Image (cartoon, rainbow, N blue to C red; front, side):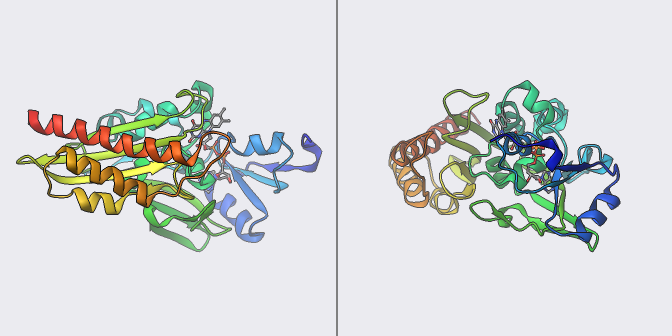
Length: 292
Ligand SMILES: Cc1cc2nc3c(=O)[nH]c(=O)nc-3n(C[C@H](O)[C@H](O)[C@H](O)COP(=O)(O)OP(=O)(O)OC[C@H]3O[C@@H](n4cnc5c(N)ncnc54)[C@H](O)[C@@H]3O)c2cc1C
């Protein structure tokens, strides 16, 4: 059943403090709407429980990308298009720029925001594995002040997050220390644009003297939350990349993930693909390491 607009209220205060005051005054009543690319899908299907929407699309503090010597700070309402076009994001955070290029079609990229992708908390969201491997930190803001949460601690369970009812994600901060790493981003879906991932991978690695000096792996669509593969990373650290190590890594990935059968794929297929994507990355890392 389609929603009736007369049942909903949308306000647009235009500044951050006014939005936060509104949310604090009636916690859990006001749903922030940024690009609306997730919210409007629910609305159109008549499945949006909230009747009060507060627009955060036009809040200047949420739309800027700030560059510091040691980190980049991305406003939560920055769109995929702004991420793709940003020179430093493209150069130093290619996993994020690539994920942005996968996220729906151009129209979706012009509206969809990074903060919306995080708060919507889909385990299949494309930008979230990149945030895990880049050690992102999110700043949450309410009338009571700000707090910083390591992004790895943000998703608590399926669609459950550390965000309180009166809080907004203000920005996402990424340390600028991964530009020397080999990076590998892969989305497996029916097609790249306009398709939800069956599995997606974000991976970073650095070789030194023929061994893995640093490796960071994260997968989407294989568990209730985007998943960092700490055990597999631990298994790989300090080793030379050989076929037997790749086999062990593949096994360790399959042990760790908890994929499901759904309309897009089967758990068995997802497990096989997840292992293959990590193996593919390790082969690439070995080849890059041999050139260095
Ligand atoms: C056609 C189509 C294709 C898509 N393809 C993909 C895809 O390939 N990959 C993918 O990952 N996603 C995809 N999506 C999903 C969607 O575009 C993304 O999740 C997008 O990032 C959501 O951002 P938004 O600003 O539109 O969020 P909104 O719809 O505005 O909000 C989504 C949720 O986040 C909350 N929220 C938004 N901003 C904040 C904030 N700053 N603080 C706190 N809460 C906030 C809202 O209250 C809401 O609960 C697709 C959607 C459509 C319609």
